[in-house]
Length: 239
Image 1: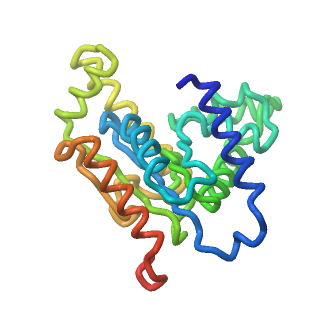
Image 2: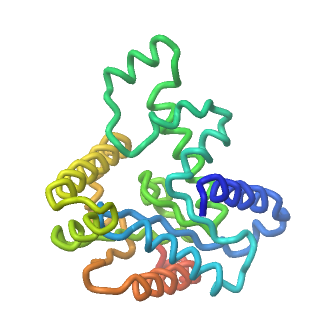
Image 3: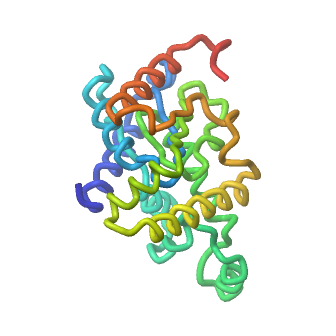
């Protein structure tokens, strides 16, 4: 699916959610999933399979289950009427603070704090509406305590993650190792800088899955079943 088509699907999701009748507010909240992942733990492919699985198996069809990954930035910019050139300042990579400060002083973009607040605002709204899978962006912290949200972390051994990166990008082992170390570090720094938490803290997640041990289909079924059970659990069991 092209980036444009994916973005249009996400726009349709948000529109259909906003248009739901006021009476729906009194029903059980629709389930939502946050997906944190180590680099090379097959997060992208698992997320895509998961949204397809949920679209087919969830008896509630509207709004449609929708994946927000890289396209989330465009959703944030659209929500808050921000120019598209700000996209490069909103990745999970650690942004150079000096460059950010200089750009803010000369008026090139809002402060990094403002951009982070807008990102979290959009993530919170999407999770509240339900039927979304939000990848990364500290969504597990943003949605902490929401009864309809299941927080999942995908991990794997260094060996298997390296093999996956080599195959996915057709690169040598050294290049894959450099990329894995850099991207994992960037995600840890992003998480620590914006949320003051350790991304590896198991208390942040309802479910941590070692992707070495299961097929993608098994992982998808496990997450989908857990999301549905978690959303129907009594309040005393939802933490």
